[in-house]
Image 1 (cartoon, rainbow, N blue to C red):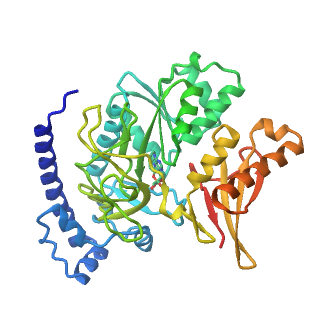
Image 2 (image 1 turned 135 degrees about the vertical axis):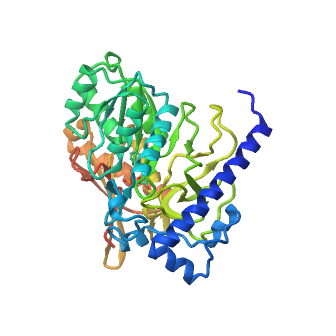
Image 3 (image 1 turned 90 degrees about the horizontal axis):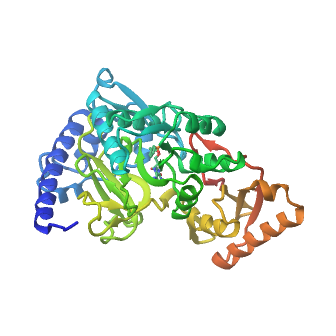
Length: 430
Ligand code: DLL
């Protein structure tokens, strides 16, 4: 595609103007209706009428997960409850869940945003979509459900089920797109292999996976095992749910939805914006939300803006795959480690996506790290000697990579507990 630079810069200017107008109206809405924000504005002598450019957003202090928690359940709603038509919560992998509400208009916009994510993933009204997220307080299932109906696809609201039942529906209902967490997709893929079913006998073409961190390697594994195109999408309930960002078929980052949200990336230590293209913590301001608007919400998710334009022609910028969470950063004996670094080592040793959990404890004043690793069927049935060998290999690799001596415990298959849909990677008991 030939890029029209001039047209693009006009579009960016128009977008900035739209964002500013929507920011101004959001600021007025929260100042009028949310005591928490009014207090912040008054305490910092911020005049809600003083926002004349997008840079003025820097005047507003960040909103944290803790602020949301302290206002549990409805303290930050900007409309009376009678105008709220839906309630969801965050999945609570990092503590108490956060309660979020939607007006009729919020639901309309959410549906539109998810429809965009589906469309950019190549999904059309001809697709048969199997939704394998839990229908409940979690935003994943309902978000995708309405977005998929909006584009006219056929929706199968299976929810979380025994993987064999998912496979039966994949086969019998001729599902063409699967929507779930990446770890659940892999569970389905591995069950398919165990059942000796040829993935080519399915009608599945696409998988849209999100709600938890995954890697490029995991994408390849899922794509190979299910014979599909697997795409990443990102969202969080505090902002709206799924629909906050999604990959297009280029697989070169996730397009953000800049007409409804304002995105910043900051250094989580200094709280200053990072340089263009550098990794930091994603901060999001909602621009059109009515029931639950948030200003400069620190997502805790680490990513970067991908510079340049996307070959697909969409002009909304892209963020990179989420690399981890700031609160998952393990600081042990002065060393900073992300679970994704441990995961890469386990992947290399095992040759497949590991299912693991990192437990941190303090024993006699010394920090200890234990990796709990679920065993695959073959290792589980293998002799003790091979299990000991696996444990030692992992210990040696971690020691040589990070200079840390750790414990490794092998756990039975599917024994690591999930919080709702998601695995909690780090348990810090210190
Ligand atoms: O997970 C919303 C969602 C549902 C997104 C379905 C995508 C698909 P929460 O339960 O509030 O909402 O959890 C949000 O999950 O802050 C990230 O830490 C993590 N997360 C979500 N999507 C991704 C992703 C939904 N694609 C939290 N990659 C976020 C990595 C993700 N982490």
